[in-house]
Length: 294
Length: 247
Ligand SMILES: Nc1ncnc2c1ncn2[C@@H]1O[C@H](COP(=O)(O)OP(=O)(O)OP(=O)(O)O)[C@@H](O)[C@H]1O
Ligand SMILES: [Mg+2]
Image 1 (tube, protein in one colour):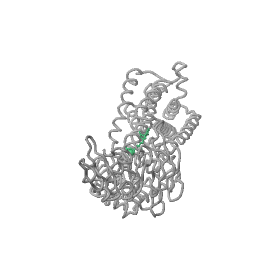
Image 2 (spheres, protein in one colour; image 1 turned 135 degrees about the horizontal axis):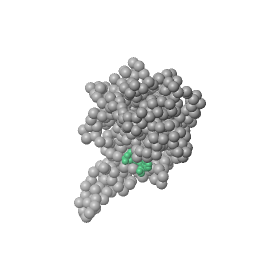
Image 3 (cartoon, protein in one colour; image 1 turned 120 degrees about the horizontal axis):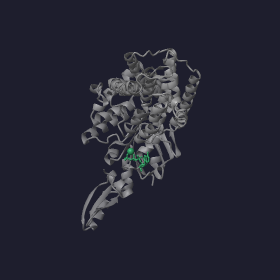
Image 4 (cartoon, protein in one colour; image 1 turned 90 degrees about the horizontal axis):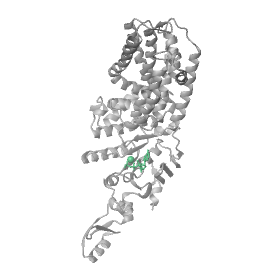
């Protein structure tokens, strides 16, 4: 089931349009004919468990992998990774921190800038402001290999922002961060989305991350998109209220559109029951019948 | 600027090389010194080969072989950056044509290949052997280094893992080192081995570089054409391969 909302652009001009995108690795179907659209300036989350096909999708969207079928359009134009102009639109933060460990934070940015055809004073200024934006000014001359995990992650993000992309892809931006740093990273991502007016496409397997950050969420499982919409829409489609019904050896969930309906049902039950508001995790569980949490 | 990609890649590689220059220098000084001791002063002492002292024969061979090893060694580095640190993705994501990656890396391989030239130059002074570093030698050297840097690049693009790389080295690079006329003239070897040697590019570059370095020798200009031909073929191969490469 795909919400109608997932294939519109949420009332904004369309930035990314994906149709029938498919990729196999031998016999494994990694991404199976997925369709979606992302509007300009949206903060868009691609939520799915390990092995769902998130990284494969990003790699196809950025030209690192060739799709077996389907097409990608950026701002209405068909994506061809051999056309260089479109690559300037895109910034990528891969799942793996692929920094040059021997080079300093500033040198890592310098090389990226040069690869994107930047040079001279303009590049130096941009390096300075990206380091500042990522709170890394003090680490300017520290080799990237000697930064903490959170600093490395931020440096990779700063690097992706250096050439002022219009679309930023982030593959699991908060993986490996402690809860405190994760919250700070969320604020940082929101700042990128708002201050740099960047369309943000991120993948995550943390449900609360998608819920806290995203304008819209697309849920992918086993290579297929199984639902999409704003977190509120997704919760509404399952039912805003849920009962946890404690049976002998399991907890059953029942969903209700509103609180009175849930209370009415609660009266009829004689086992132990809890009533609460639906979370995105409940939606995911209901759709897939399994837990996503790590 | 159209070559920004070439320059960026070259800058990145040489910045890293600079960080480990001393280590690289020392490491590339050791093996030619050992070969020089074992072959030059051990086996071949006092012998004459092709009308010159064995040392005057051996040193140009060692120069060619060691510089080949350095230029080819970019294979391992690209491999690590591709499969392990995944820095290579940065090149694939950047707005540059993929042939720029080939040229950037080849220039880096050539730069690395110059290190042993300095080292063997010093050894030849110590041994009292007169090598003639002429413009003709420089041209031959550049062709030679570009060929092996390209081979290294191609190897790094076609392997699927780091251990494949070791296999290529064992079956291609090591035989080439010993059968291409570094230590003794190819003509002295059995016919079968001469046939094998004739498909190794190192055979031709050793012959050419040795001739340009040795004052008494005459240079076979046809060899420039052979090396130039090999270079063009390898570049076209690299171009095809890199166009298809996925992360
Ligand atoms: N290079 C590859 N070769 C073979 N199979 C692959 C390759 N890359 C991905 N796959 C397979 O494709 C499927 C999707 O993988 P992908 O990396 O896209 O998942 P993911 O959603 O990013 O997972 P994770 O959360 O673990 O990063 C998996 O079954 C995986 O094993
Ligand atoms: Mg992934």
